[in-house]
Length: 437
Image 1 (tube, rainbow, N blue to C red):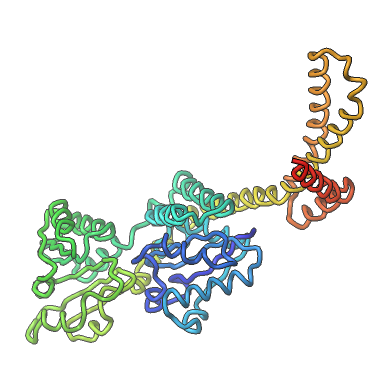
Image 2 (cartoon, rainbow, N blue to C red):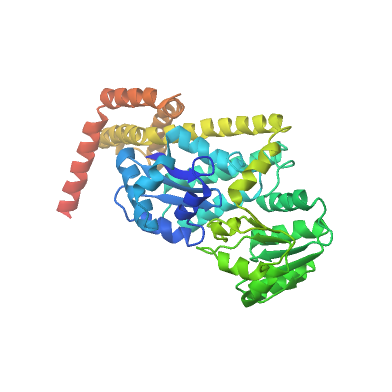
């Protein structure tokens, strides 16, 4: 089994396409379960955030599995493959492992080092695991990625200069107005990103924060937490009319603010501009809203232009994080190679212990006169000799530097000890024993 990754991200696809391939607004566990029904996909995890939709699978036949995943993406999202294939990236083996580790470390994020991504990776894994879509390979590579993320945050200061997308949204508002004192802000949505945004707004001294959400209780709770006020979802047009800035971040599968809403809200005689910052994927605001005079619309990709400075000045920390990722990739691949040696090691042990057993049976007549204590000591000595003989070859086989060398060594061992013959003999004996019963 090798790791295979297919996906799109903010590096390869615009927000218009990413929202069409988004899984986050639905159930990523159910999506993984549906994908796992395909013959070439024995285990899988679906990771979906505002900046990426990525599918991790184990594969014995990479080409066949890749085709199955592409067909799944097309079927699940009802999207012709020719629309997304030019933007799809594919990673195999080491490259796929390194990519996942970089994602968990925050190195692939739009805001390098942002803290939310590690939790999102864990949530994606738990969702797939809860649907029994995870096997030994994905179990190991994802738990290893959690360790990478923790190491990077513990051993580097990469997160100290990093900010969240919600922080950048507020930073844009601050750039627009210089000061937020006295400004009225409407926050649409009451989820985690909206909570962070509202907290940043409050810390920047905004004049008034208005919260609206489809779930009124959630809007009330958030408004109380940040000293704002909530309005019913049905009053969104009136709330838009009185706002200077709108920041929206819901999990809705399609736009919730359309051109008609905004035109009705601002009327024909509004003097002040309305700034709308849409940080949701899929987008909450219909793109044509940006064509309205006096309305300035920003989406998640527009934020990327503001966050490039986030990396500057932290080159040393990023470099340190990259070295940690490289170390952990080497460690993971060593584990994977050791797994490749396991069948040969098991067969070799079975061969040695089979010889021991047959010799004990052959010498049964001579051993019959031994006391129980002496017989037990004799068997312990023969077992210990085998364990010592196998110790070094086992360690060396697991520690071979690359897969090609391991294949050569395992083939030599199989030939030298005729392990295939001994396995066949063992299977034959098992079948004969079963028949006799």
